[in-house]
Image (cartoon, rainbow, N blue to C red; front, top):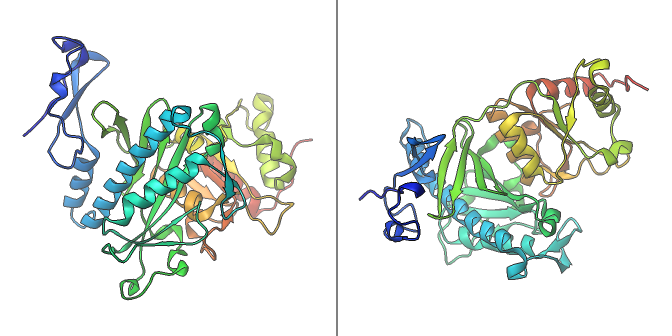
Length: 386
């Protein structure tokens, strides 16, 4: 059975919703083809659903394992629920803080806890996971004995940029999927099983809850964008093989932290803001949202460089962002889109974690700009301008 979405201006009655009555809520249950307009009414584009995309990846030689496909679909459904909670906001009393802190000592927002619970509950029963780890939990979460265990590990940041929730700016969910070590099925999974370098990721992605709810994913074959059709409740493919330009004229950094930057970062930013009269010979624009998901999404769509470097005044704290929950999945996506990601002098995906909530400096985006900063760090340069 195939269902079609009728273009709004072609409906017999714009108030008649009967043409949607047979559309299933769960796109997995039926082979659904969606059509929408682009540029004009006559140009129809077939929209591929997330499930159709994953099935095609599974059918390729040496393609996506079925268990991984099911896991990504479960995560996508959980993100739809989180997006609904974000959209409701104050209507469902989702704004504000709780009287609790996460493992990093940060006061938790109501939406942080709700999103974390949604992801836990959605993924416990599916039989795809051996265990989960979240930025909001002190240690790993084992799959309850009443459910079957799978061969994958899920790490995630349930709400990235949660400080933006109360002011109605974009926030998101970041996730990373790893294979559990061989032999883990015969014992209880331990924290050490999660301490894998980012190169071991088999899939990663993020969902951004903005004017549209968009999911960006990679399974190691490029980067793909899916947009949530809220009327139908389905993720539809809206862009394939996202590519980040090598060069850029935009950078994202929190300038209020300049006193904590290394000489390499200071030099790079000074060169950018000096404009056409400086060594770069061109004008740069600065963008900063306070949400890694929002800043990285902009870079995915039009290029740029994102920097949250380590703090030279806090040698015991190598950075602000978490390696497993934020840096690794974003670095995987950035590299799959043709960009680069480093903590300063070392490729992020090659860093071997030594603890679950490890922090790291982050510099990622357009390849040539990231390489320039990396060379400044390697050569231990001093600021070039006064």
